[in-house]
Image (cartoon, rainbow, N blue to C red; front, side, top):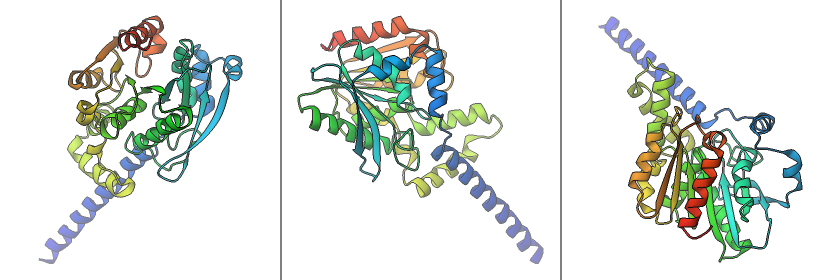
Length: 307
């Protein structure tokens, strides 16, 4: 009998250790994903021809510090090139910062739009301790939208462009909080964070089944960062968005599969447009298809009356 109890205790200790180690490691990876440095981002954007220091320095910029509802400040910049009431807000992807948004901002500056670029929580110069892939970030986006409406006028025409996590964030904002912009451009979003994490787990750790990881990961994230993965699901709120959306995804993307954007597009009601770029890995739709990308943006703006 004693031997039986010892075996049970050993098995329990092994199981507890497995759950604790897996939960801690996985939640750490999710919450504290390694960010690219500003130097790394600038070097990449320069090599791709997106960032020219002199041109960026010459823009009429105003630094912004917007209060997040979670007690830190959101860093950003207002680039106002004219006195129009048209503003684009740009949401960068995970591990990036405002310098990654410059290439998209330039598309709209050329077309006479003013712009707001900002750092998500825990990125760039913004505060915040963890990355939540849209759960907390959507509230910060609302704070930025509110700032534009309050400081630039309630009659402002506002569009929001997001890449990857930024695209999912704007969908969570528009579908789960308020449909507060006039249109959206969602470039390579995930449709459901739990599905995306399970997909990455399958790709990167082929021998580990998701049922051995995901239930533990979900529990640890709920305890440590106070949110449920099920609440980070653009596909569950997409039907609430009435304003027009341009969905973009590159066909070869193997980080977030294009089927996620196709699912979002299919479920979106009302005016919508889909551009599947033939070239480019994840978040490279514009870099590898520049003329076609800008053409699709122009067509979308014309269709919704903001060209």
